[in-house]
Image (cartoon, rainbow, N blue to C red; front, side, top):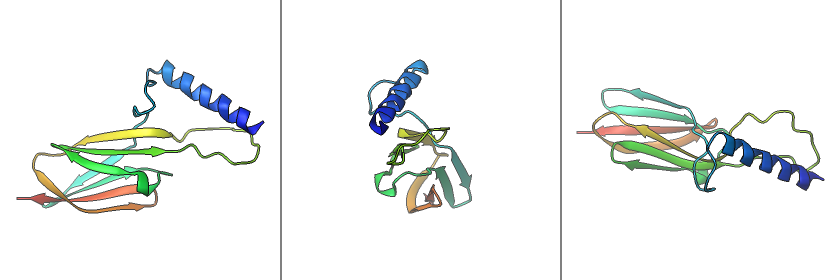
Length: 125
């Protein structure tokens, strides 16, 4: 019975994504996490909200003047039968591309704290 409920939920999700034209290949991103960026004279601090994302599955890379953060958040459901009352947290593959202010940067530190990926970028001369 629980397996059937999961199949129904997954089917509903696929239909929902098609409705909003987000469906396609399973490898396509289906959501974007919110981002904060703060700039100082010598650095950038970027924080990306990633609740429930496994830190081992996060990829952060620079592509020209853009920071790309790619990962996936799994839908976690209890093993025992349950009634789903609300599903608001996004899940699935995501890709967030953040344009950086002009200049060159070096990743000084990266950490995941309280569900937020924190990136500290040092400005290069």
